[in-house]
Structures are given as C-alpha cells and as structure tokens.
Length: 273
Image (cartoon, rainbow, N blue to C red; front, side):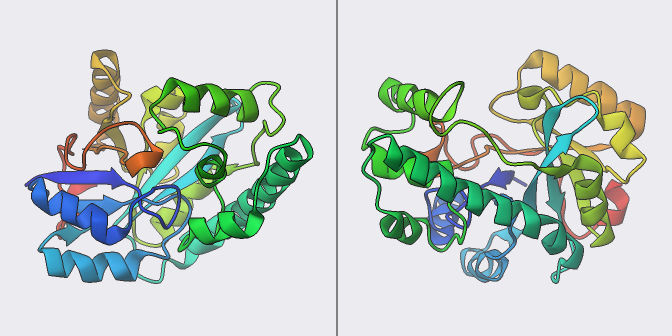
C-alpha cells in the first residue's frame, strides 16, 4: 500500500486537474489517494471515475476550514470515507464557501482600488471548475513568478498579510461542527497538520465530538510533531494519517506520493476507529 491521503485539485486551491494528479500518482506508485479539496466535495464523481481508470483506490475526502474559538486559532479538519450524498458536510461547508467567495470578490476590489490591474472575469474563468475564488487565483493574475520564489512570497505577504490592502480572513465554522458533520455522514474526522496550526490542545475535546484520527505525516511536521501525534493517538485510540498536501504549482515543491499515510482507510473503516 502507498497512500497519499492529502492532495488538492483545481476543484479548490490546487493548480492541477484531477486527471493530472491521478497520472502523477500512478507514475509514483500510489495505490490509495484522497482528494481533500477545501470545503467542497463537488469533484468526487470525477475522482472516483478516474480512480477506476488509473487503478487507484479513491477514498472520498474533504478538508474543512474550521476554528477553535476557545483558543482563537484555525483548525483544519479532514473527513474521509463519508457517505456519497455528504448531506451534513455540504450543509456545513455551504456557508464557508459563500463567505470565501464574497471575501475574495471584496479583496479583488480593494486591490483594484490600490492600482492593481485585475480582470474579475478572467479570475473566475481561471478558477474553474472551482466555483470559489481563492487567493492563489488572484495571485495568478498578479504575477508570473512561481509560488516557491522569493518574489511571489514577498508580494503575497505584502498584499494579503499584516497591513496589506487585501489582508484579513473569513469567519470559519466551529471545529466541533466540522467533526460532527463528518461523523454524521458516516465519515472519519481527522485533525489536519496540528503542528502547522498548533491545534494540538483541542484534540482531546474533539474526541468527545467524534474525532477519529490525527494527521501525522505532513511536510510541515518534524520529529517533535510525530511524537506529539503518536502520544495523542495512543492516549485516545486515534488513527494516524498522512499525505503531501499537494497543491501543484500553487504550493510548495513536492510530488504526489512523496509523503504517505501509515493508515489505510479502505473497506474496513470500523476497525480503524
């Protein structure tokens, strides 16, 4: 088994089509994959279909943008192997997508007012099949520099962070709501990259809401994170997952399958929880 359970496509803020990601996964020997596009499951039918063509098991996935309001910090919640209709997940994510789109449109207007030339129609078109505009889509219109370049990172920081003209963020849903929505759809809720967002403290509390796992293997994790994740997993009987957090050219340089999961989320879900 070679499972990359954290990849993104152009259905949210990844640059690559599902077919492109699948081709790379196949070339790199990946046998299980989960597309965890942000706050949407709209690409799942295509992902399942292409998985059958490439001979790769597709685990239904999502990454929900959530928040720990007690500690005032972000918590990303992965959801795996949920029921196809994903009724509760879609309901929880609908408000996030609405807020993100409205905020992105506002950011574009602020950037235009500041003198940046942006074509809203071109941005909308370049974002497809995502129906939501992400900062990566705006940046694509502002610079030809690659995501990994110092020039890109400097411009991003200048515009979207600190006192930047387009700085700020939307209000995310409560992390407990995210976990409960995934569980209500029969899925496996997993806290994503707790080392990246320092979201360790909420994990014991989320267990009571139905949390079933923690992401251990991630590009932003090191030995200290592995130890903390393992200790929490042992203490609360949680599975440990992992993946590349692949975003194509919209993210750090990494290939699909470079980081894999130590857990398989296939047919025996009940034995993993």
